[in-house]
Every structure is written in structure tokens, then in C-alpha cells.
Image 1: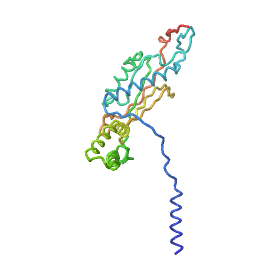
Image 2 (image 1 turned 90 degrees about the vertical axis):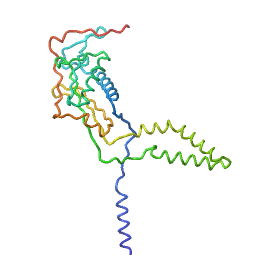
Image 3 (image 1 turned 135 degrees about the vertical axis):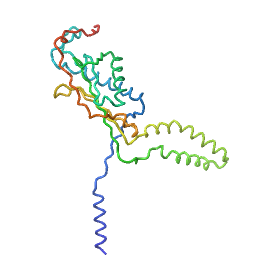
Image 4 (image 1 turned 45 degrees about the horizontal axis):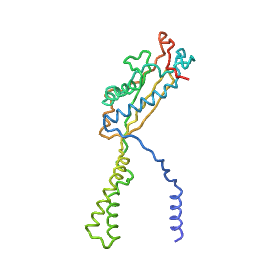
Length: 255
């Protein structure tokens, strides 16, 4: 009898030796379900792009700008911008490109339809779908149970209450919980499909800027990001032509 018991103990110990799953920290990401969400994505992209390129020196090293009386190397972000989608025929690109142009113009930057002397902003959208719809249940999944149990608990706590009074109390409790349940519905509304938008500025082998944002999408919306043709290669930002290297003043701040 000892041998089977030892075998069971060994199997149990082997199972205990397996490492558990390390939980990720709490995180959140946007969900894209309509054109308004694409416009917001364009605004976030424009903010990060212009903020980052202001810190990148002009790639020729010959351009200069005057800042508070000092001549300093020009910023790459001072150029005009050219937007290049790597899936230009996709439904997403046909909407996102105008949104991104508009976002840059509203922020005071110039946008062109020609690549010459421009910062070429490439963007690429890739979709992913994960197997199965199984996910950890959220608070919302248990809300009906909790609220019903709460109403019953109220009724049992006060024997002098009538059934009608308990029903009213339960109804008021559900009304009070409404905004909370709405919040959990929003944060738990995840899907098993995502899109990753990668924006980049390159010059030769050097990546001058790159930023990626991941968002949930509906599986049925994945085709909006697809192209009927092979993905285009990103375009390079050209060196600044000689005629564009003149000194240019920048707004001066009063002392």
C-alpha cells in the first residue's frame, strides 16, 4: 500500500513545483468603434509626433534657427509634414490621413502633399485576433446576483417591512448602483481583436521617431484596416535641400 501512496505524493509535489501565472499590472487602452474614435487617435498621434520631433535636430546639420538671439541647429519638427499610409487603400487610411493632417494644421504645423523637403510621417495599422471569447468575468457579470441578494438581505433584515417596501428599497438600490454598473460595463467591454498603429519617421538606416498605440476593435471591423495590396514600405525623410537652409527666426520670449 505504501507504493501507491508514494506515487500520489510524488505527483502532487510535482504539480506544486510548477510555477504559477504572474499577474500583469492593471492597464487600460482605448477602443476604436467609430470615426470619432479615429479622430481622437489622430489627435493623440499629432501631439506625440510634434512633441518628439521638436527634440530631433535637423538631419542635414546645416539648418539653423534663432532662439532668443542664439543661432542653434534647426529642429526637424520645424519642417512641413507629409503623411504616408502604408495601407493607402484601406477604409481606415482614407479617414485617418485627413484627420491627422487636420490635427497638425490646428497645432500650427504645415502639411504638404509632396515629399520634397518634408518630414515623411509613415503609419502602419496591423490587426490581431485572439482565440476564443473566454475572459475573466468582470464585476458586471455578477451584478444581477449581487443586487438581488442585496434586496433580499434588506427584506430579511427588517421583519416589520412589507414585501412592497422591500421591493421599493431594492429598486432604489438598483437605481443608485446604475452609474457604478455603467462604469464597470465600460472598462470591461474588451474584445478579442486589436489593432496596433505604428507611426514612424526614418532617414536612411536611422529611426528618428517611432510610436505605437494598441486599441481594442470589434472583430467585424478588422477589414477596415486591411489593404487589397501588399503592404507598402515606409518612405524616408529626405535631406533638406540647399535652398531651404536659410536662417529662420523663431518667436522670441520677453525677458
